[in-house]
Image 1: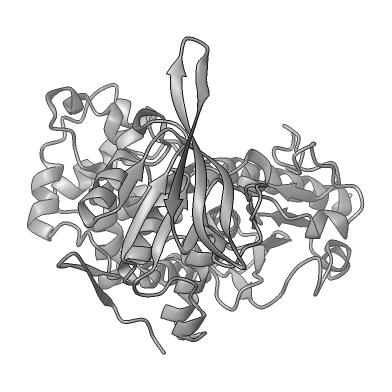
Image 2: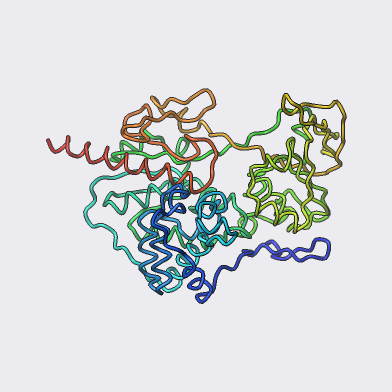
Length: 454
């Protein structure tokens, strides 16, 4: 049964539909016309993928939306996604010269408008390359995998993406709630990459259903690992195995699957009337908290061992969460999950700021809850590394790569990028590294083919 799209909390209606509806055409062009087109565009230096921001904004200001879309496509394969979930307020928009007057350009919303308009009007079409300069297998279809696939396809390299789930998208599809990033937007971006000639094979778990050695045996010249950090980090505290204690990534993926009618609503671990605690204060923690409210939880409280100033979530996401009814408890460090069989509370020690940093006070607080969501980060799975010889990892399990060719692991021809190398980061930071790795793969494939010809 599909999740009811509307839930109530304290008289306020919360929806799973995308919250921000974006600019109208008139609003987008008016906003674009405010851009000063600086000679030294700080907005561009603030963008991790060095997007040509002033150029696409100027094209939009003149009504040349197709040109604006072409300019964005030089650097980004996922503009509709980046326009919605990038940390603009910390990156490009934070660097805008008009920000000093509290009137910075809404760069993210302009990028989103251009991408959405292009898709709706079907403006841009890049025909797939007929002659393939080589074949590359991409493992994983999250931000890193999709970026590598798109960049290599544009260079005339054949790409096949292997995805363990039944649908491509990775963390974009299964880890970010629909009210922040519409699933149809992700499907649209994947479709655009398919039109470049990229092949997607789903329901294939590399390391179990097929190995890296077998992929090489099938004729692939190089392999890219973009598997991200699939395993959640859990607190090793007493009571961690109690029913009702869960990882945020598991919870969010279950909601996505239920919304797609791939499992029953009853399978979701949060139910109407639940008292929910969320441990952590990053964007994933706030996504989980806001999702729990939409499922009808009676109360949702975020618990964090530091203060509001140290939280890693975006300020805008924090403000939205508070407005929706999420509560926050600062300076509380979890000690144990309480309960017998089923969790019924969380024992915490009150923290305080001292000259020596954060320290415990010895004072104990017990927070009641029948569901506790842990959102303190993820770590990479060892499935591929353990079934492949020659790929070395560091002491935390992250894949070791080299500078030349950029992104290649300690095994020749196997590359890696994104969270599996650089630890969990934002979508655009994963894309930044993936673009550099794609260039490294292209260099490697070209050299490999040249040697074969000789």
